[in-house]
Image: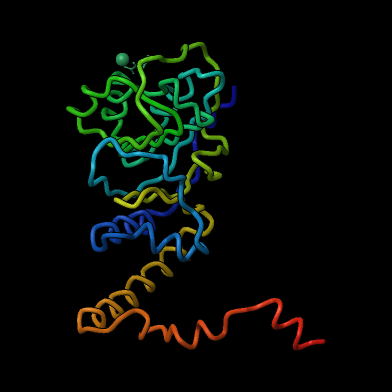
Length: 234
Ligand SMILES: O=C([O-])CC(=O)C(=O)O
Ligand SMILES: [Mg+2]
């Protein structure tokens, strides 16, 4: 079992930068995905426990093996305030990888959220605790706690590679992951894109259509047509 105790995190300036974007803009995840080249989002089967979850934080990873919860429990103990625990449950929605006791432990450590590509249990208690969870489902069956699993190793979660120290941003649209190495550049580009979008919004409020603003007629005339191109080159 691999347990990496200490991880590299983005600077406080970068972490705060993402948090400020989430406070100031409703759909930051969409802008980040755009900047990442229309990628970076976890799959749409990841569902929030509550509506209105909006946060940004640094990733701690837990890679479950054989449905075991040990890595999750250890990941909580290694977390710092504001971290988000991301669990690689290999998409197993028929087993719980998180529950009330783990939630209370996570809250004691200041963990901001859990993102699990499997299920969790004790849903009523966790709802009362108001702890943010994104998961593939809710189910009573839970795995053993037998010492299997890895903490703070590279994982996959809901279709994405995730590394410890990456940034996660969550809003009503879903979850995006920003690799730590690109976290400053993506922050700056996302900020710039959201400011441009503000300008577009102003024009739409004034009565324009998006078709006018991007000149959709010209764009549609420029559509690539393989057969036409082949005939031109004949
Ligand atoms: O068995 C476990 O550790 C999962 C659970 O129910 C809890 O955390 O309350
Ligand atoms: Mg329990």
